[in-house]
Image (cartoon, rainbow, N blue to C red):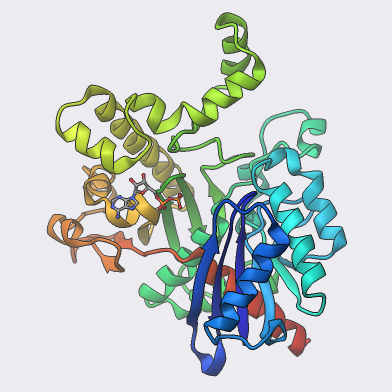
Length: 398
Ligand code: ADP
């Protein structure tokens, strides 16, 4: 079974082709185009590239195309992208202005080009659909909530990958198999008396979030209605008091649009460091004594610890703390700063193992650490392909 995962930007098309034959998962091809001006042609060129590579003879070899869609009104999970779902995505264009419009346009073009190939979307919000309401509500009037102003949370594909893989690594196949079936079962199934599995997943990268995971399902996340909240992001602000924006508009004489631009382009790690939005550069400069870089790094670490602490309490402890994404997988010094002085909570980092771990799966806690500390490289496209496959398999077994 061959599944194409297409990543759609307003001027980019990237893809990966997976094959799930014989119980194996294989990446057959990956590629992409930037600065796309003619999207129908880009889709045509993608198919031509797959044919030239000999991995498909025609689009009829594709069991489906999977998309990492972001958000839609009253729709989440892994679903077929029909006209109703596309309309539900359009209804929330305002919540994901950079993502929903290009996805809707691109998906319609895929549908025109290959009407017989199922188009399946895995929404980034899917992983949070079973989180308790108390964790996802904002304390706003009911009409605001009805308009979509609530904690939706994002990075769902990445944290779902961590949920499944960490359960496997911790020897909890019972949880791993429930995590795999989460969307098909409509929520976490009972563990039938087995102890709970409590995981705190830290996706630290260009954008960052911390998610609490109980028995393979998210209980909450640091991200909110938009990816503007939670940890400071590369250029984006992270958590901010709701009064700050009207105050800045009035006292700094900014338009609302300019305030929004500054919060999404000039803030976060870039704004704090006054130097860069890249954590590699920030960590290097902090080590050389750059005050802004030191502040950005320290703020990032404080914020990560704040959210880890929140989920540690909510989960009544943790079995594992997991690091993933660009910073989490590669930057040992940031992992060490986040894990410093937590022995009172049962977390003991093995400093040598941590320092030696880069972009690879590893246990980086000491053998005595009650809470295992893991590095798990994420693979969001694979999650989209896997969920698409599960969706199709489920259709045939219904
Ligand atoms: P995105 O969210 O855009 O997918 P990534 O997950 O690739 O981003 O993370 C980007 C961040 O991760 C950057 O701040 C960068 O400093 C850090 N990073 C990425 N790759 C590496 C690496 N090989 N070594 C150290 N840091 C890295």
